[in-house]
Length: 551
Ligand SMILES: *[C@@H]1O[C@H](CO)[C@@H](O)[C@H](O)[C@H]1NC(C)=O
Ligand SMILES: *[C@@H]1O[C@H](CO)[C@@H](O)[C@H](O)[C@H]1NC(C)=O
Ligand SMILES: *[C@@H]1O[C@H](CO)[C@@H](O)[C@H](O)[C@H]1NC(C)=O
Ligand SMILES: *[C@@H]1O[C@H](CO)[C@@H](O)[C@H](O)[C@H]1NC(C)=O
Ligand SMILES: *[C@@H]1O[C@H](CO)[C@@H](O)[C@H](O)[C@H]1NC(C)=O
Ligand SMILES: *[C@@H]1O[C@H](CO)[C@@H](O)[C@H](O)[C@H]1NC(C)=O
Ligand SMILES: *[C@@H]1O[C@H](CO)[C@@H](O)[C@H](O)[C@H]1NC(C)=O
Ligand SMILES: *[C@@H]1O[C@H](CO)[C@@H](O)[C@H](O)[C@H]1NC(C)=O
Image (cartoon, rainbow, N blue to C red; front, side, top):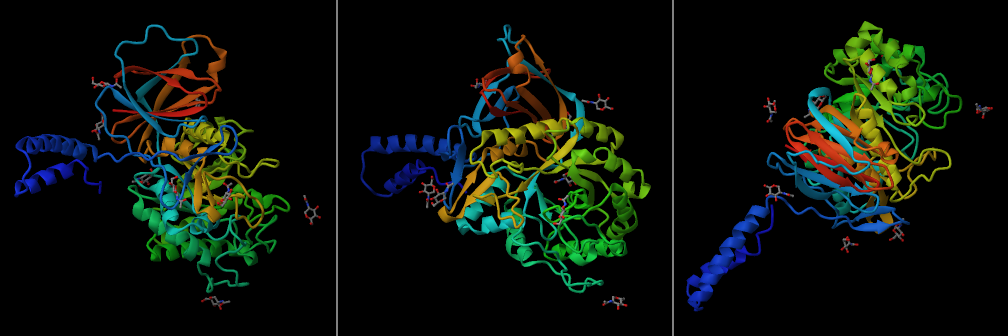
């Protein structure tokens, strides 16, 4: 509910004054006219709440975070539906813009003379590609622990930043099934040795304290349907060939069925608490557990072992227990496994029947180009591709947390554009929130996150990565469809060529959304050419992300 516009007080004063107070007639009339006008204007404006701006803090040149606490946090209001021919533009940049909102109109006459380096992006809504599932992150134990370390008010604003109508409106949440490295200890849901009937299976205190309470709150504040999916890092030690959560080891052959039963127990436990999962992945990074001495929770699988387990155990068990509508995502690993893993898995008709998607992690994307995504799509066009994990600060020698790094935000935006231009349907970040050291992580595998919590100050810092994801998540809801966008330089200028890239979507409400990323250190001029609307020309600031929305 908005506040009563202050001007409405004038009307109340007027009405009260009519009941007997003696003031001059002229004064009455002035109050009446001014009051009525400003009251009406105020009421008209109160429909769109004021966007709250970023309270910026610098950690070195150009390294800007937005500071939030228990009483203040910047917001992002949804764009109002504009008239045909108008567009809204939201810009964030290295030099400090955060979702700066402006508007403009298409021009029906093409711009006569384009400046050097102008790039013309042509939207073609008749050429359509994949539908979008959505955007999100992971409610790891570490994320929950960090959120819980804040006061109630700050917790609320953090969750609202991601999930509410005044935030990014994320709609996907990944839930580790048991421990991951982003926990304070390694564990599973049944650490009782040789519990072959899973009699002692139970959720951990981390679920009831750090995951479930925040899931309840974020689902309540979200205007969108939240799609939950689970991923597991390791089976109980006693089910594994190496008897440990870490290192090289795999599921013992005799526990293939028990391991499928374990998944059902997990889904049932969450369902009994009111959480119906949208999906699960077969195993987080199955190749980790094939590496000698791997340092955190893992379990090794080959593609063929996974094929056998899905076909003979997991698939039939999900169906027999009422989970036939659950999305089953295979692989959950880096591009190195494309397209060989899907090829092996989907060569089996049973796997083809049970599994619906292919989950990909971003960690080797800088080594291996996006071509394998496109290739995989054409080999398995009925299986959706989804990015299920990404983070910065994981490489040796890198700062784990780099407060305010624009480059890290830019890498996120570039990844979304590159992967979604190659058939990826959703993009899911890793930890929702980490502490100032990029933890807690029991295996010292600390990394960066879009939100960093400073518990001692009861503050949290929204990093450029947060805004980068917002440029997509907020404006490209579930059900949107990617459409063709072709970028072409009008005038030779080698410098600008590689620096600006983009992607376009049509939403279910028929708005067109174009996101343009300028990774160059100089401003660029972009033209968006739409066959039905005309052309618009905008300056893209140096190192900026720009979202255009129009009907
Ligand atoms: C919270 O942030 C707002 C805006 O920066 C500031 O005015 C207020 O003093 C802060 N509150 C505390 C308790 O620091
Ligand atoms: C766009 O066009 C409308 C209607 O002609 C006009 O009212 C508005 O001021 C224009 N906006 C801009 C930013 O030029
Ligand atoms: C979103 O997309 C997925 C996959 O296409 C679908 O399962 C889900 O029901 C959709 N709808 C909503 C409202 O999330
Ligand atoms: C597990 O259940 C089976 C069948 O109910 C039973 O025969 C077996 O003794 C149980 N094993 C243990 C260790 O409880
Ligand atoms: C793994 O650890 C063992 C025992 O600590 C050591 O002997 C071996 O060299 C290590 N292997 C690799 C590949 O690091
Ligand atoms: C994607 O793969 C298809 C089928 O092999 C091919 O025709 C197309 O050119 C590829 N697109 C890109 C962008 O590589
Ligand atoms: C975290 O908060 C403490 C207490 O207010 C402050 O001294 C410290 O500088 C903050 N850390 C960062 C990285 O801002
Ligand atoms: C969007 O456009 C399509 C085709 O032009 C039309 O069939 C559909 O009803 C429109 N949807 C909305 C919500 O306006």
